[in-house]
Length: 272
Length: 236
Ligand SMILES: Nc1ncnc2c1ncn2[C@@H]1O[C@H](COP(=O)(O)OP(=O)(O)OP(=O)(O)O)[C@@H](O)[C@H]1O
Ligand SMILES: [Mg+2]
Image 1 (tube, helix red, strand yellow):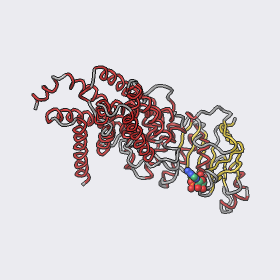
Image 2 (cartoon, chains in turn purple, cyan; image 1 turned 90 degrees about the vertical axis):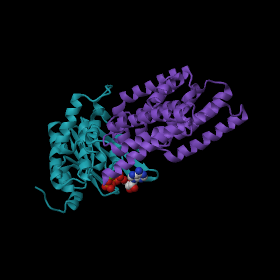
Image 3 (tube, chains in turn green, brown; image 1 turned 30 degrees about the horizontal axis):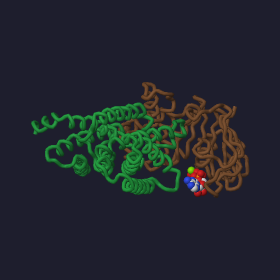
Image 4 (cartoon, protein in one colour; image 1 turned 30 degrees about the vertical axis):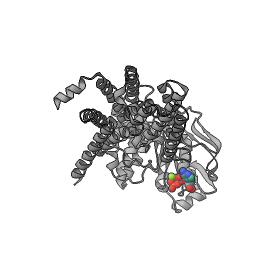
């Protein structure tokens, strides 16, 4: 096993995948806890479908894919996280509307223009092993920025997630921090889409936090533990997919399901 | 000088007007109790004072330049945080955040303040427990500690004694009048415990269905309304 692991590390494309992948996993796990607690577990799905539509449009217009999809996804995240609370359409319904709407737009644009090319299908199913050097640089910069912002505003993000009206009443700029969460989420999802594909990205956000929440009692330990779970699952998923030649996205999700099942059993035994 | 003023305020949810043309003002150091039946609009008024809900008419203001970062608040019901993993310490500490301008992390002083409040409210031994696994009364104490951490000039409390045992309730009233007198913090409290309210507070605001009363506790005691609610017994 050790030899196949070191063999795996001898391929530069895998090193690239691991570098960006680990960073994005950390971001997703950090934000995941807040999103799950704010009842926005499905936001990953919603945003990645919007991402898909914006990519289709970017290809149709011959524009740079990330330059289009990041701002579009940030706008969508704003809509979902901030308007969801006041408007008549509640969070889950808004996400469902956004998911199917964006998918429809994306498919229409694709079929009216180029037809399904490999780039677009990569975004649907993930193509972490096909990352270019530029992808890696951009991925590293953006995820480092997300992590830095999260750490700097960790206490405020906690306060706003725990009790929004108390925070507003006592003079914390709730709107600003909700906007921050929305922006960081959108950037993370767009980066993660490249790895996991539109269809599986939600799992990266949701699973590690759900597992960690079952066994930790402090918010800080939930966040730290979900980051650890996320990274471990990612690396073992990549390894599994390398050894058995199965799709990476699916094996990463499978690893997460396994951890969730183990945690579930441990907790059931502890409760008895 | 008035810390908080309320000018001809009406508040409504859609077409349902809850408060109608209400005016009063609170000076620094006052201790105001808001009383009235269920559904009279007490919590709604607090939300208005805190800027969480806009009045449909009139306005709130402060001639004292009160900033929201000087305010502590205890909501009547926290939104369902049933599965939120957070320790008591983390919750209480979050009350100190509003004294930060830019610094991202808690300082030594914040931690001392949080620990002091935790001690005052007798939740030391559950400091590292998970908030969601506490009893209702214990949760109330933790939220009170958080509100006290945040309060620098004014504290607004919505039925703070709900769920507290009689001993804690007594201690709590003592604590509030202590911070009111010693630290000069203005207290605005919603309460159904009208007897304690009249004894403890300096001012009473009664919200009725179509009439309001605002005045000092003494004036309230002598009014028709007060006599009715206090059961006619003269209080020492
Ligand atoms: N979110 C809301 N949406 C619509 N109507 C509301 C809402 N909250 C309160 N109301 C209405 O406003 C009125 C006043 O409510 P409020 O919570 O201010 O009463 P209260 O005086 O605090 O009562 P209690 O003693 O039960 O706490 C009620 O009749 C209620 O129906
Ligand atoms: Mg109320």
